[in-house]
Amino acid sequence: MILVVGGAGYIGSHFVEELIKEQEVLVLDNFSTGHKHLLNEKAQFIEGNLGDEQLLNDIFSNYKINAVIHFAASSLVGESVLNPMKYYENNVSATITLLKVMMEHHVKKFIFSSTAATYGIPTTDFITEETAINPINPYGKSKLMVEWMLEDFSKSYGLSYVILRYFNAAGAHVNGRIGENHSPETHLIPIVLEHLLGIRESISVFGNDYPTEDGTCIRDYIHVTDLANAHLLSLNALLENKIHTDVFNLGNGSGYSVMEVIKTCEDVTKKSASIVIEARRTGDPSRLVASSEKITATLGWKPVFDLVSIVETAWKWHSSRI
Ligand SMILES: NC(=O)c1ccc[n+]([C@@H]2O[C@H](COP(=O)([O-])OP(=O)(O)OC[C@H]3O[C@@H](n4cnc5c(N)ncnc54)[C@H](O)[C@@H]3O)[C@@H](O)[C@H]2O)c1
Ligand SMILES: O=c1ccn([C@@H]2O[C@H](COP(=O)(O)OP(=O)(O)O[C@H]3O[C@H](CO)[C@@H](O)[C@H](O)[C@H]3O)[C@@H](O)[C@H]2O)c(=O)[nH]1
Image (cartoon, rainbow, N blue to C red):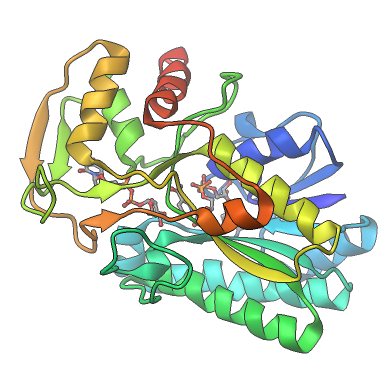
């Protein structure tokens, strides 16, 4: 059985949707940002907190867990600046408890959701795993701290792991059952689509004076099912002992500006957006685009969805919910 921590969240639920076709799945989630309606009915479920050592001990005693996939985290950059304690508690401290109980129960296969935010403000056009790591906010730092712990736990306790650094997760499952449902929503694509559905009055564009062609920030949008498939490949490589430890970027390798994303949403929905240019959002690098060549070369992973199909799947999900 595979334990998926945070499996009621956006990315975790899309992973469970694929994993359930291959494995028995147990989800642990406290619904702090996740939702019951995102759970897959074939997965077993326990409601509880990742940092609850007694609960974790019970889980690892009662189920034969072969590997843990860890999606649970607080993940709003702005909130992490205002309330770093929450981020170090939920992302670092609770993860220490999980790893401690795993080691006690001799469960030594682990996949960790890391982020492009660990790179901070990169000076290179395409970010590889060799690009300097320099997070500029508590969220990115909390993820990097866990990465460092994993390295040390591997050396000292034989932990085997894959770290996946996602760029901008977006889109919804093609089956239309699950999709992105953050509250508050801070991500660009769902915000634009909510506006085009009439739920928001306008779209705020945070800064048009960046050193990019149209002055707005460039990001690498990657479909959530492409992310899920990268986890499946990583899990199988760990279970078959083909990987002991590794770290991979996950992106499409193409950058789109905020204005280009809005235009794509307009084209897909055949609606026109009302835009308000606002001040820059603190901590936004001008450009974050991945090179994912390493995971392609190592595991054969290739993203399938481009920006148009990301927006199409997201639109299907958002428009079905009103
Ligand atoms: N969304 C993105 O673009 C993105 C990009 C890079 C990295 N990530 C990382 O991917 C992971 C998943 O992101 P998401 O967008 O699906 O977030 P999400 O908030 O939708 O999912 C997180 C899930 O974890 C659960 N959770 C949080 N703290 C918990 C705790 N202490 N105990 C039990 N459950 C807990 C939440 O209830 C939720 O279901 C996170 O680790 C995030 O940092 C996300
Ligand atoms: O209403 C909005 C929302 C966003 N943006 C801009 O759109 C871009 C994308 O923003 P957003 O969708 O919030 O994603 P990011 O801030 O790039 O962060 C995401 O992607 C990172 C990896 O690249 C992850 O670490 C984070 O967890 C995840 O939220 C940024 O330039 C924002 O300034 C706007 O202009 N208006």
